[in-house]
Amino acid sequence: MNTATTSPVAKDDRDLIIERVFDAPRALVFEAWTDKKHLMQWSCPSEMTLTAFEMARDIVQPGAPYRLCMTGSDGIDHWLSGVYRDVVAATRVSYTAAWEDAAGQRGHETLVTVTFEDAGAATKLTLRQAPFATDATRDANRWGWTSTLDHLSAYLTGVR
Image 1 (cartoon, one colour):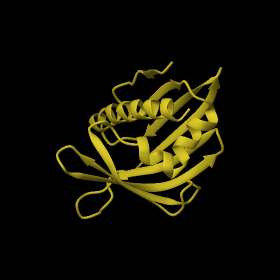
Image 2: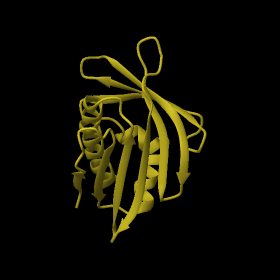
Image 3: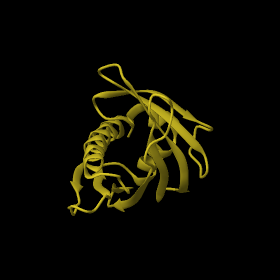
Image 4: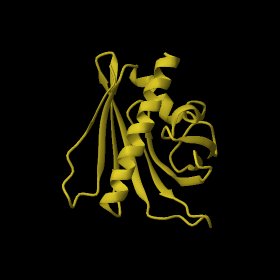
């Protein structure tokens, strides 16, 4: 039972909110977001491959930086970096995120907050990313997150 909905977004609203229910226990869904061994398996859109994930430790923690590379089917590397801000066991994880240009300079930074709630034996995940510089970047990220969450769903099915 995996369902996805995206909240309506007003023209001037630069927040992205996605809710999804995963047929997996909350502790497992949270662990998939916070343990590098899990993150390496699912955390990129379908047209990309996660080729690097740099973290100070294998488990995320507040204040810890991260940097990852997603390589597109065209062979182009896309680097993303940030810092974990908040990690509350089985409840919430938040972190900053900014794409890097070819020179390694970080662009516009957003804050990603993911919350986890029990939904019977399943888990309701709510992802909020904001603020986006433009509607177009918000919408591109909606597509990327939807595809990435599809990967997470498939991954969770295999590890349960």
